[in-house]
Image (cartoon, rainbow, N blue to C red; front, side, top):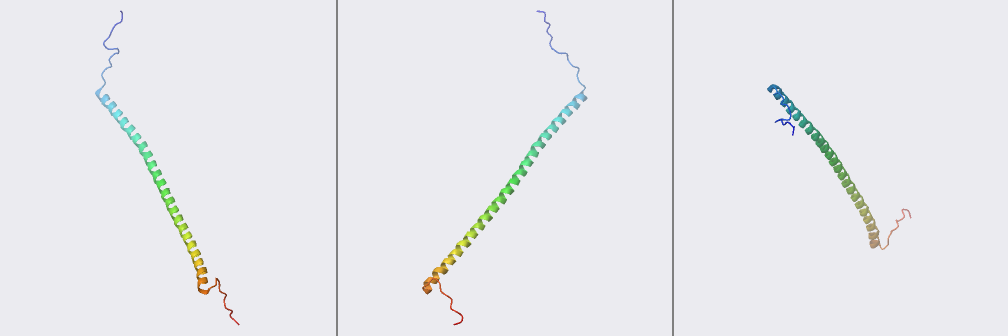
Length: 112
């Protein structure tokens, strides 16, 4: 067959100047470091926002828990006071009946 085979399918490029090669490698490394720093900033920014959001939610939950506890204790105190007042009223009614024989006693007239 009439195909010529070469050892390399492309022509060899002249060797680069060593200074240019070092310069290009340095630029590549700088680019890589800057890219990594940029990625880190993005993730840390997201992490900071998430932390702030968690703190905000935590504070709101704490406030809500405190307000619920205060309202429950206030309701307990209110119910307790009502029950005690009712018991006092019943005691007065029942104690009067047992001592005097009647449920209610009439006041004595001042002038007779």
